[in-house]
Amino acid sequence: MSLTAVTTTTGAAEEPRVVKARHPWRWIATGVVLVLLAMAVNALITNPAWDWPVVREYLFHPSVVSAVLFTVELTVLGIVLGFLLGTVLALMRLSRVPLLTAVAWGYVWLFRSVPLILQLLFWYNLGALYRQISFGIPFGPAFYSVDSMDLIGPVTAAVLGLSLHQAAYAAEIVRGGLLSVDPGQLEAAAALGIPRRRQIFRIQLPQAMRSIVPAAGNEIIGLVKGTSVVYIMALPELFYQVQVIYNRNGRVIAMLLVAAIWYLVLTTVLSVAQYYVERRFGRGMARELPPTPLWRARRLVAARLAARRAGRAVPFGGTVGGAR
Amino acid sequence: MVEVRGVHKSFGPLHVLRGVDLRVDPGEVTVIIGPSGSGKSTLLRCINHLEKIDRGHVTIDGEYIGYRRSGNRLYELRERDILRQRTHIGFVFQHFNLFPHLTVLENVIEAPLSAQRRPRDEVERLAVELLAQVGLADKAHAYPRQLSGGQQQRVAIARALALRPKVVLFDEPTSALDPELVGEVLEVMKALARSGTTMIVVTHEIGFAREVADTVVFLDEGRVVEQGPPAQVLDAPRHERTRAFLGRVR
Image (cartoon, rainbow over all chains, first blue to last red; front, side):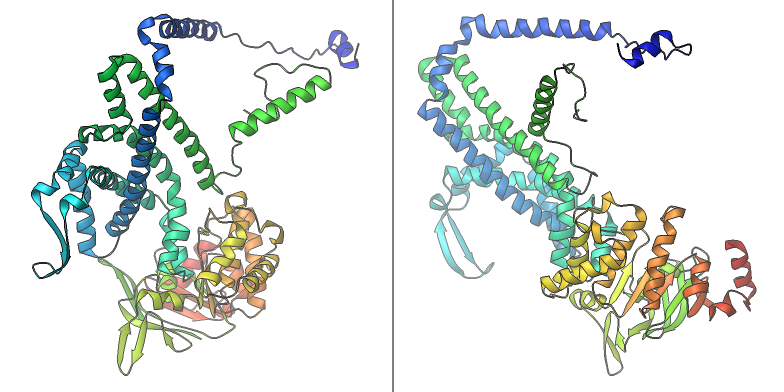
């Protein structure tokens, strides 16, 4: 028997014992949700109409995989070109040149107003509107001209439509991010004589990224799924491809499930990437960066191993080394 | 030498500076005091052209700030040239305005590298030296948010000094600090003053003015009411308004 145990049983001024609060409703809620989850899993597995064997057969089918890659390609091009143009538009909008401000405003107004699907069809049919596209002096001679049918095929039309559409939203996200930076930061940079471009790219944008990244994450994930609208141009992206397959084999539900699984995989990868990008731009913002999930898990395992070696158990859910 | 001549500045209908003259010789410490709204901060911000002046001019070693003089004309400078001029003028803000995403060392070396294009190893050596001077040698790789207000302001002073400026302007450097942190910043500023740095300080710390200032300037309603050595302006003010102000802040 330890010394403390002796004093607590015999001491006159007895140290009060802590009795943990009980939470019966938490247990009941947990039970209900578990039952509901089990029902959902059961419904997914046991109903033969889901056609799991067909899903398995087509999940890594070459035509599906190449469609996934094409979807990724469209997303990457749409986001990269969209955010490049969007950043330029945001800087134009915040510039001190009235015409640039007005043009940037007008662009966002126009491309946010026109539905994406309409815009895609418009680019697709550009050939009917302008047979020739030429570069030269406005109202004057042309130096170079090209047949618009050759220049804008369906893929180009899709990339053009997606990125021009995305640029309008990206412009507002980047502008919002730039405005969220304390004006004192630019003032300090100006007082130090830091060149204007360096002020933007070294001081303002990195701080703006903190509010740009979550919104951009939304946009990127939105675009992964948004690429499915280009199916109207008969481009072999994921959604169009599964439609082609189920029109042939009649397994509609199974093929839609294949597409859904791939969209889930893509967004999961992006969500994880977003977490780490946010951490990167969170440097210096919190006193200490929060541990990553991986790091937390490693710490928990290490603590449990150490506890086992020491011959005592750590209660589950207990705080270990401040990891919460 | 910093020279301010007949400077006027309005913000819309608000006439903040109404003809201010000021002269600060090299190595001198000038402390500007005055009630809030008297135009102290605006005057400082006009000296490094963070605010454009409406009338009058500011020169540093004969160079017009924000303008180029040719004959009897002042040509407005482009932003790039104004930025270059500012590298000769250190500025310490009330709210520090350190760059939170950069480490202390990166904060200090940023402007010498990008604005003055000095070699990195020289600038880093100087930065380490300056950080030691303000008592923060061990904080070079910390981020500003990990420091106390007093420490942040001392970093801001090191950052201003890293440009090797001709004059350092302090805009109420201790007003945003907890009372027990004011002392450490004032100590750094006193050491700077002793080392012969030309300083213009806007502050409410009358004790600092008395101990360090070569000249005390009392500003009220956009005009210099009186100026002179601290013994005269602070202890034997000639103007009623100066007396009333000093009575209030004491």
